[in-house]
Length: 210
Image (cartoon, rainbow, N blue to C red; front, side, top):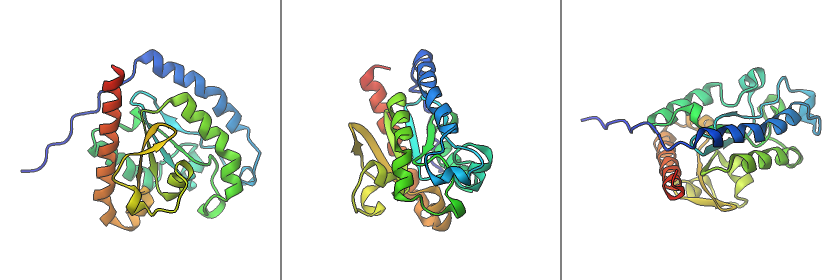
């Protein structure tokens, strides 16, 4: 017998809380849209600030926008994003109920890794997002995002599958969808990590009484 799909995630924050987060994020999104503080501003098409909702309290963080994201101004809309949507759905979570962003908000040319100085320059935007969103749980997609939250040298295989901590926020590290596309055998582990992410968010909601 096939496993039953999980029930839809329903531990949502109140509408007024969600609206307040959107208001708090708005000026930072406007600032990011005009940012020319690093060399990435010279080659971008669009700033990719972030998208989604604070309803669930779940925040997923990737590394940097790719070509599709740069073209549309939205995070995770290419093949990696489509896979992420499917994995979230299998966990009972709708993409529109989570907030998704990246460590850097502009696409590095040729999809190269962001340079350290670019990450440092863009860091205030991500910190502002996290301050406004007040996540119940963070999920770092890939080693680059994980290193931003949790500096160290451990491999993803050692970090994933457990609850870590970023400034008091429960944090899950898992494989970037692009890595899963290259190595489909990682899919089961990533799905398990997202299931753990959901459990942590629901536990936080219960403890908060909301």
